[in-house]
Length: 311
Image (tube, rainbow, N blue to C red; front, side, top):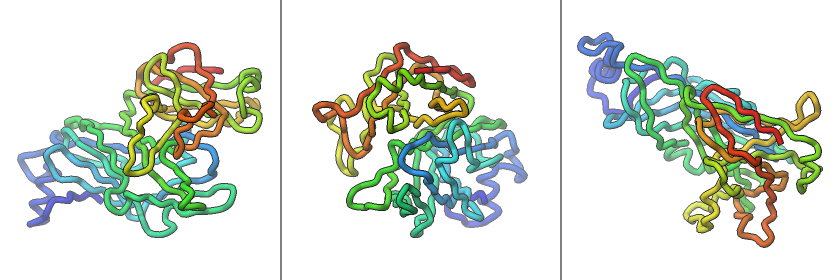
């Protein structure tokens, strides 16, 4: 259902003002069509991350927010949305053309609506911002006049999903989200040689995790999501990964990975099999417990293309 959060003095007036169609003086040329999907990258240690959504809200610049409420609600296992697989939030939704300031994913905050499954069972997933602001992406985008825009929200679970000691065995979601224009992204994928893995610590017992950093020649850093109300004071943390992906065994019994929805550009790619706790800034420890193997060349991602990076 489409609605605006603006106060309503008359239903007919609200519909004309917002839709600008079939009321005279506007017309479909002033409107745009929005398609919005959801994706995620693989993360280790859990088997299911279920989030229940109640709707989506978008905010035009200088205008009132527009709500699309789901009836029934939409729930997704984020771990099923990997390697370019997407779920649909909005399909063919009509909105006024122009500039937009943000997107908000509204979540069901009732107990048990969202949860995580790991080796010990099912546990509640707490979303601290859920009741007040939902999952908000403050990122501008443009809806073309009389055209169609296709965007995807990428959940970076490796940065977002936390198992704090005080909340055990439950989980906390501190969402790290990216809003991506589907016409401006590409993919990095590849496999691992057994000899490469045998030379790295922990690869005999843990799958490799691939880290992607924006720019060439970046010195890899671990993931660190500092506690709420604190600031990461480690200057090396400016090199935290854009996203990560846990490799999995393919039909040839080789570890393989695929990272879709990367904006076109140049990247540094590395991997490790060492555990990375997002609540701990590991590179401040001596010695650093995380050892990265860096791909020797800068990696170029081209729109709508797949770049192969084998280790």
